[in-house]
Length: 109
Image (cartoon, rainbow, N blue to C red; front, side):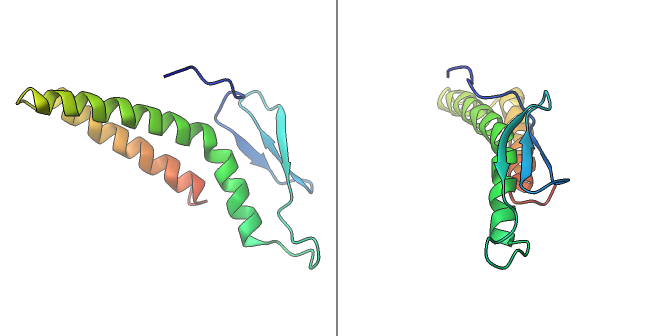
């Protein structure tokens, strides 16, 4: 796996102004997102969902990378005829990390 070249996470959204700002871990603005419909000027849930997905991107990438690594370690331990407690515990912790990242992407965190 290569090291990420994107702005450092976690990212957050500042909705104090329109358009909303997506900020990196250093509070640098990396994107602007309109949360309202251009015609109705009302908050659009699809726009909000898209913004939540953007904000969660670094955590989703980290969780997926770790899940891949943990699953590979688990697969190797099973192929040797023995799923170690360490591999099982790592897989469980990684699944929780993935669940949190997914919840953030879905706007539940």
